[in-house]
Image (cartoon, rainbow, N blue to C red; front, side, top):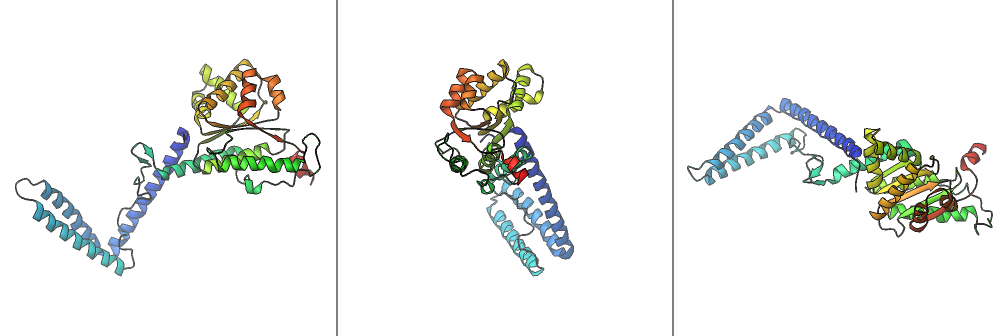
Length: 329
């Protein structure tokens, strides 16, 4: 699960702020305890001295350190027991002064060796959702809020069923794709249909569920994606290389509004690189477009159209513009 360096950086900052806040809380609690129970301060001083004595005894090569070590440990155990009694008598938890991290697995470092800890993964997922929300308005866009009421129940001869029946199938596939991400038979989706029929809404639903599962998700428009490819090629923007890397390496890429870009040799090359690289590396992609597959064949190079047709499951959105229906309702 390849989170972007930006997401990892922001998540690490959250982890650092959380760690700093915890230390501050622990210092404040210790100061309160020492003021109310001076004997605890004295005990802690004796415990620190005992730890130093324990180290010195263990390193003493002149005599057998075992008896001295055992004696110091017994004294320290008695001191800790007395401290716990004092804390409990004064309404504190017996171990409240122990320095305990939020995450015992990594001790709030975020990493266990070279492996990202689950606590940092969770923060990465949260930061990723924030990034997606700024683009997709994920506040209300979820499968639970997807309504079929906007789609007609009238039979469509071209479809062979009603728009609502068609969208029942489309929504089911999108939901299964998201909820079973990585294990679902279908790896890539091509959402096609006129504007205002729910393509971006269901794309956002997919993004939310897949991101919540801990996978890296990148959403961007075709125009922005191809601009970044061009800027990276010609060295126009230092951030473009990072963007292109995100497009190629994320677990799920959602490319919105294919066909809105100016068709050029550069954009066709970028699209082919993007589609082919992700297919070869078995990375999942969702593409939405106002173009049909027939129009894709007419507009793009044959090697692009053939991959979209052969490797993507086409989901056709039909009906009336939901934005206009809502405006007039």
